[in-house]
Image (cartoon, rainbow, N blue to C red; front, side):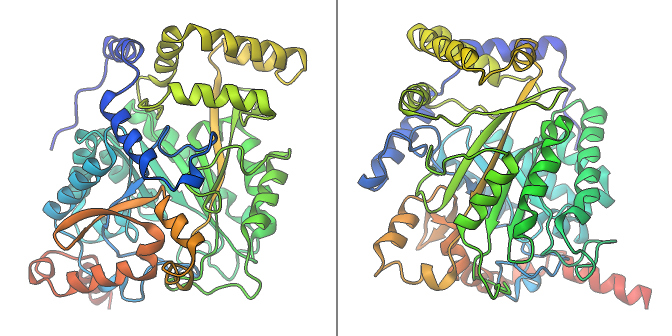
Length: 480
């Protein structure tokens, strides 16, 4: 396999011009309209994002192997013994997710630790091809990982970026993890002990950018338990203390523990309200949970910050007040069908400029709002200098609240749980009775993973392929 030709300055400007001229996808708009029609009526509110900006975020039913043994793993106990899907099966999944989502949608390359599994099985070329195939299909893949394998073998990550087209990497770092070299779970007393790990991944991303010339951005995932709930503000403050960090880590996601899979549930379970309080403490200001909703309000809560470089000054982009909310959602209606995910050519800004040039009335309303914010000192002179100089970026900080298995099993008798599943924005393509359907992750955690793994364990063709477990066993035998 050969790396694609490096992009020239002319390539970048052609991509930006195309983004300015045609910022929205007509095909995506049709998918969004369909998704809006499918939403429960009570969730078709002005602050609803699903069906207006996104359909849903998808995921693959990928390799289940993981070398870690975390206290809050959502997978079944037999996950490490399950064969890795074939390349054709992965392509079929990607095609199905593309049909269910439309173009420009997010696709999480996940399962157990996919990078771990493909490296240990010697099937690195397959993962590069999976990422490349997703990109060519018109999706935006994000590889989910604990990152240890990629940190120890940065050449693998470089291939995924340079040859596969990977631009997004989600790394899970928290105190629930058992297996990270140099950080035994018994000796990690608070999340600050893991800041050197976070910094190593920051440096790795910057080095990959330098070596490949491509923009690799990362998301930080963190499970919240009674053991680390008080560390949530510290994690956020650490990222915000240096704008170079949030220029790499564009999303900070905190997930209250869910009683599912192999999870060792807290004696005093953490609630979403607990987590949101700590998020606000870390951000340094009170942010409403319901300013925007992604699907069901019990599932996702989110805010975005605008960060100035190099000062690190930041301001919230969450609308406050009725007038600001109306303007925000008027703008949201205009971005239907537009993917604002960043890329190596920096096209999102040009898409926004293109949209504003096509909606002059909205442009003047936005300018009026910015003038008002300036007079109220909500936008400082320093922030304006950074904005006008193009030295700003956004970082999303939020919470994903998964349901426990016992709760999901009650969907037929609990209308709230059913509504949450019906409005889910995190669904993967699963073949059921010969037809591909989008299944919520909470339903996967409740029982679907086990069903799929049982099928793979009985597939002789998969058993004949190289597997992570066999390579690990061979390595152990050689050491002995």
